[in-house]
Image (tube, rainbow, N blue to C red; front, side):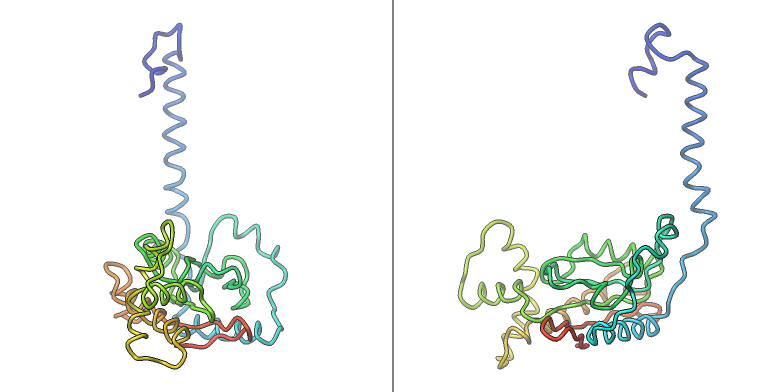
Length: 238
């Protein structure tokens, strides 16, 4: 309780005012609970249907024939709730915009972005929220061509480059996929390391407990990987 509430009457609120404030506080605290209880369960799009919706949107974007152009449509409805049909783990690269790449409007995608499109505890918690409370049934890990974070990881491992600030922590998160790709000595190391990093993140999410793994096993959640080609605008599964 604040100092003001325990001060003498001449320095603070009267008992009547205190009772009124208490009642108002109780009502304010109860309101969100009542609203939440009254809200219907968020609609869930089946994983395969969600994936098909993304495929169709990606094809429209690559063909420069998007249908999502009126971003004001549905704005009032979105102010009260969100019902995304898929979650995207995307790189922070400014050239990669999931809503545009998949030709979806505001409220359609639940996007988690970080350089290198990996998942740390904060990102995992965000995805768990999307799956458990927003009804998301599909998670797409979206890598992209020419990824600077993957290229930097290759240089740190192969050429012993030292990076400043907090970048070494990011490199550590990307090491597993990059090292797996390097062990195969591919002709295009950057492309293979990018794809392997996506595959690694898909595996991590598929076995993440306690929320994601049981849903993946039950088939109510699907985790897949894709690569976006910045030059062509196309998206390919990996």
